[in-house]
Image 1 (cartoon, rainbow, N blue to C red):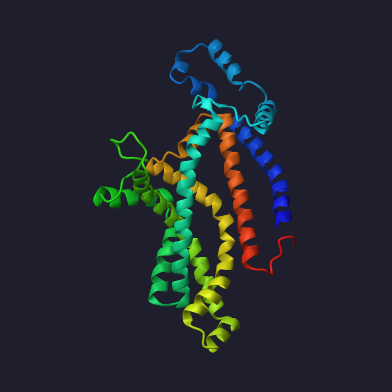
Image 2 (tube, one colour):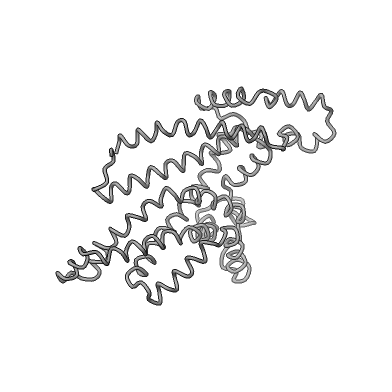
Length: 321
């Protein structure tokens, strides 16, 4: 396990370097002018001389490679630079937002795994039954439904029509303090929407895995020995059926990040979505690079986690193979 983790860590270095350079290259080719975005309305009347001076102060007049190398060397020493659009250090922008994004993504991922596994086991137990046909039809429909559309539909039904849950934000409109009860209430809708958008893949994998496991000779032998159906299902079929699902942990991380950005925008959740959009449209090099590296690292960690979980669940799989 340690050897695999070390190999993956070494392999991640060139990937992260390539990603950061690609961010600066794409930003340099972008039609958006970071100087005008930084100056705002004042840039409309500013002289060319003032704009050129501001461009030099921001460092965007330097060659692409020079800007990338300067940012990279500073980042390796813990300095992620200053955000030109936020007017604050990049580290502070990320620190105040990443926790809320992690809370939303983690809760949604838990909802998707637990609900998808439970429904997958029940449907796989009796494939072709009423529950299987119903849930499978809903799952295939949800696969094609964008997360932002589900979010808007949830706001219309639960917040506007029923008035049961808040429509967005982190706290109530009249409140100036953040409390656990308010955060929990405001988390329900975005977490459920994001979780439901990821649920179909977990459900379908578990359903298929459990259904195939129930047809294996070992499971039939367990039933022939008189073991209870619950023991056969949970102790034998579920373990075998969960193995394919574990590979989804890593592959769903990019979709989870993308979905989280959309859901955060729809529900005005104070995560990194707004910062990402502003960094992209304003060509904020330091903030855009830091957020991209963060997302890439999350994907790499997700892939590593899925491999480790698969190896722990199936002893036949070697970590050092």
